[in-house]
Image (cartoon, rainbow, N blue to C red; front, side, top):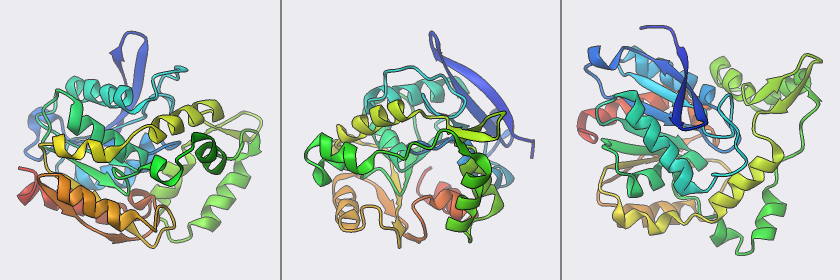
Length: 287
């Protein structure tokens, strides 16, 4: 297995996305390739544990910092779901992968649902890790209420050491690779402080794009197999998550649901287990 390789990929004039590649060259691989998309305010490195395990199993893998996030370009617009899904479609085409599986977590799950429903790109299937069924408008019919309730803390300028201490305290059962990937959501400044790679203003623009998105309208048009890996034991959307998953299972032609006990960031908390589910599905679900 080769070491991770970072690459910048220009997917449209003036817009480069930062990507991290794992595993064998696609031309030399017998296993299904994967493209991995993170959630809101996250970054590609939160997939590191999953990526390393998939690569160990022989899969070529690309994880991406989506626009505005991580080390990718940070335009002020284009954060609606159709545009972000088109970014991902262009990235998939640039990889040279033959019919990859595209997985997304949280907001990234909604992005891959939009991708599967609308993009003219050849996919083997998609996977949604505690996402793909997020319908914020159903919970917050008024955007101002959603913005007030879901705005992130203004953490720019906080000492990085303080953020790290908080993360380790909040997630004592996470592996080191998951913690490191989560801390990579922040730029470490020379003065010892940190700032989210995704600015507050862009965060709110991404959130508005998610609020505008209704994944249920996309389900009937998806013709590739979809795996949902929802988290049990998390407060996020707990009251209606099961109903949303049941709706998705009824509307999408081919669905597999694999519930996992854990936090919203299952891929950071349980990377081996998530990778194993993805790998096993290439044997009988994504063919």
